[in-house]
Image (cartoon, rainbow, N blue to C red; front, side):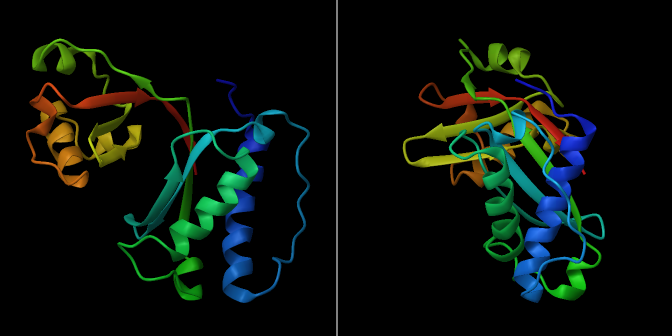
Amino acid sequence: MSTLTDNEKQYLLKLAYSTIFQKLSGKKKGEDFKEPESSVINEKRGCFVTLHLDNSLRGCIGNIDPVYKLIKGIKKNALNAAFSDPRFTPLSLEEFRRVEIEISVLTIPEELVFSSEKDLLQKLKPQKHGVIISKKYHSATYLPQVWEQLPDKKDFLSNLCIKAGLGKNAWKERNITIKTYSAEYFS
């Protein structure tokens, strides 16, 4: 995975802010900013845009698989996090003035092969692994940053199962699929 330069990170953050502002106000933000010369921001990458308001989650939407160029994914996910996250009402202009945006750029998920509950717990790396849990039509993910709120591996997996609409101990079952990825995140 190519890492982003500080200039690229700043560009992507400005892009997310200006995309949301334009939707809220119907006009472009006063400042123009130039796209950096970069192959990385034009690569197809998975990414998430997370909004925080007063240190609380205010929206988080993304795509795990690399289906869009990073620039397009950031715009799309910024709008969805601000206006289409089903857990929240659409972001207001007043909230926008105080919101903090965090961007996560993901590696391609890989299946984590494990032989037992103990083996799974040993292979998971808190703070490093984002985790996708799935079983049949149920699936959910937590970004690596979620380990900060759920540092215990068993609690992390149980909460992720609940998020996926599964029983809290579904992660202990044999027919569960777990994939991991890492993320470069910045705000």
